[in-house]
Length: 75
Image (cartoon, rainbow, N blue to C red; front, side, top):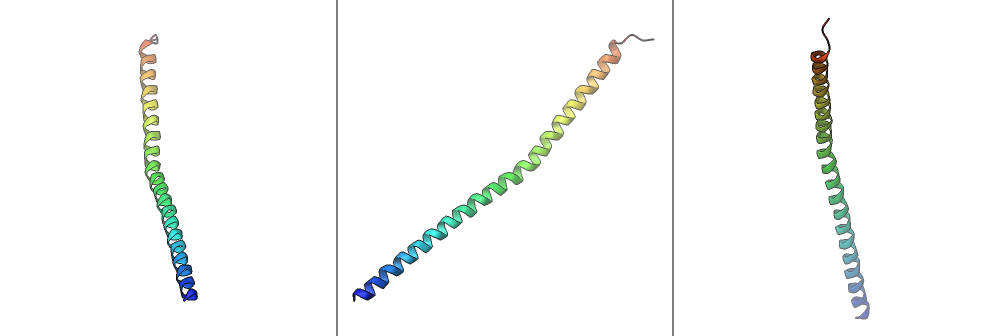
């Protein structure tokens, strides 16, 4: 009877450790998936922000050129 109880406890501990290992693995996979999603979301936002800054700088440059030509003395 003692040997059977020992096997049951050993099996229960083994099952518990296996379950804990699977839970830890799922947590890591969930975190990894979250990081990938955040990166996939950030990439287009970064490109859009860069394009927007470029457009604003181009518009400001055009405004400055127009002001310069308006202020400059005509020959």
